[in-house]
Length: 359
Image (cartoon, rainbow, N blue to C red):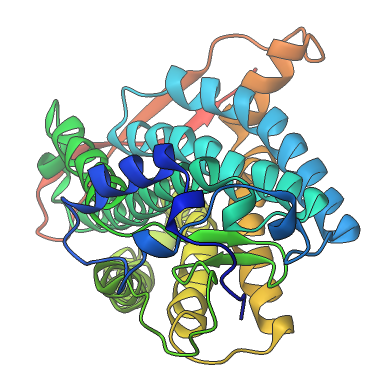
């Protein structure tokens, strides 16, 4: 793709040391002679990229708007964090706000500047490591959220009681850090408008720059998410409406509506990961038309950007909290929670919070 210019004497010593420091610990090498091909930053590399003003401004502006919408939603989730589901959602919202900086804000700036790896090698190397760390942590976090919803529906909520939720989230955090530090980072490229493990610094047509753990992570997310959502769908349609007739009482109907609302929120949270997971694995191994590459990037962006919108549309508690923060809904008082005892699948009685009344 890009031709090599210059020799090793013009290499950036800072980048060389940085790459060696990190890749010496990597589980997967970045590729043959990757370090020796790195050239010092210079104007000659700027010609290898392409400015993309339309997609660049879209990414930058949409990212900033999403961050502004997400922040009050994150505060609302934090206020409800006594519930394990909201603890997980708060953690995911924090990671997603960090991810939006990579996939929308800094991505858009890179498109506007027409960057490639060797225009700003230190920056793009660190940005790629930061991005893959946030991405993989978010993937595992979404799976934890799905498992939490499934456990609640199957009367196994004790799995996430107390500090156990924080233990699960700690695992997801470490998981992302391991990917950031010990696997090759994807590199931004304005010409192809995405992040690739191939930095395109030579004429090699071979796919020698790979991150196998990343591919395994993405495929695992797709398979497990699909399977678990089918299980949850079955639980909502059969286990929540037993022979006794849960729909015959107001309590049963409210609980089912509440469960469906939370299910929709969880599904939207995981939609972007589900779609972009497959595409990112595919186009890092096989030729992909530019339109599909852009589609994968937009799916990633929208999967994150739409989450605060869904929160505000579906979740009355979050919407009321955000309106109160803005001083729009001055009559909003602290939420009152109504609890009811209803039969569970094994006919035992347990207390379940099914509705919240905002006055």
